[in-house]
Length: 116
Length: 116
Image 1: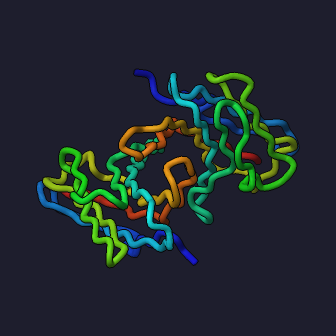
Image 2: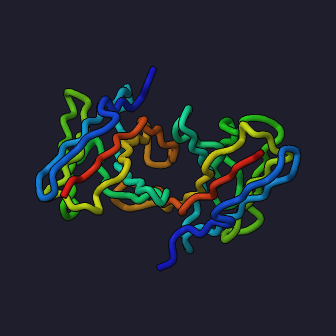
């Protein structure tokens, strides 16, 4: 089975530009997450969706960040305008209810963003 | 307060030996789940093992086992027969509350370097 697919894997952009990160969750998973990883703050949950509906966006740092999930197989995280402090690895992850209760979250390979 | 504490920033282990990675957690919930993820230098986050708070037996997955001590609130990962490919950062994570709460809190991680 295909895992979580993210694109682009690497992006270098200039400050002020718009950045769009894309994610395709594992087929059949009804939860989708966006995480950010930095050296200073570790792994942070930005937002998560259930059945394409945003459930908790309290981790989104500011209005420059927005996320959408137009259908069950696609989500975007957009930063506009980007700033150097947004440089990080952005992970998309997905999950489904498991009978055993673990509801394991599976991560994509990450999108490495550098804003110069 | 930190929900997940990993006190070992880095460890060295000889190939074929076992290594234990420490993880302590803080929660007042009765129902919670504990996870370990591996992040190799390539950056992806790989799910390793899960332990539910009500699971009576310690979880095992191949060479990975989780030493769950509920009273001590610890969930140490044991990697047996270390291989060079085990060199990576390892993260402990916790999901609090009922199974329908998907938020994961991550520790700071432990870097493991396996020596030949």
